[in-house]
Length: 287
Image 1 (tube, one colour):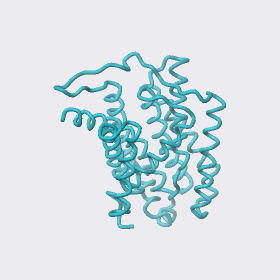
Image 2: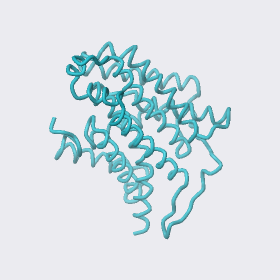
Image 3: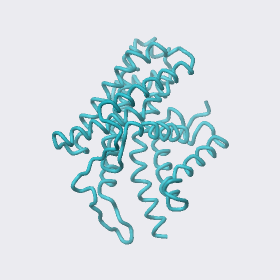
Image 4: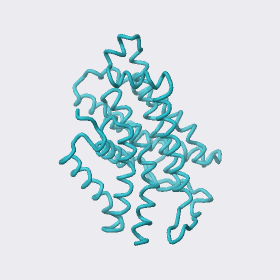
């Protein structure tokens, strides 16, 4: 029993980062109805930037989230302003092809700059643990979960309590209505895409002490994010957060019940069940 409880605890701690990663994707889709298939590759760029800051300047990855989040925000805003704006009203197939093209460019540029070998940030406290009864808590995972939760809460408060956040929610609910009251939709879209990219960039920094990464890792993060937002409900931020925790726990339990190499099967089985019985997602609306 303690083994299963340990797996659930580990899944929740990793699921917090999954949630932050998926919240960014869900925000972009909720505002613009565009699926960012370059989401995972933006996260990998956040990981490499954090790795570079750690190896060259000695900046701890939990501190470099400010720099990586800002850098990936600018990257996301540039992609939206220069490319996505041109295909907002195009068929979904065109949007998918464009974002897959952006993903390929980001992956191959990372391959040219850093090479194909896996990298990892080895912090001094990487193996620090403490016990609560029979359950062991990994310090980096716990800190990662706490920071991810704080960032997700900050995003929620920004969207609910600030004028810019209200503008983003208004554009997401009714684009024509937002235009009629004088909202600059293109600026709102740029801001929303940049914030979604910043979330995944920060999530990349938080993940660097936990697992190795390479340029090709972006595909895994994209698929995982897409899985989470479908489970939680496309465009629903709370659903993305809950979905991230569910996927983290399901993968952790899958590693115990099946094998570590098969842990993703459990989360995809969960995805299939959701699509069969509640295709709008756990917290998605009737649309």
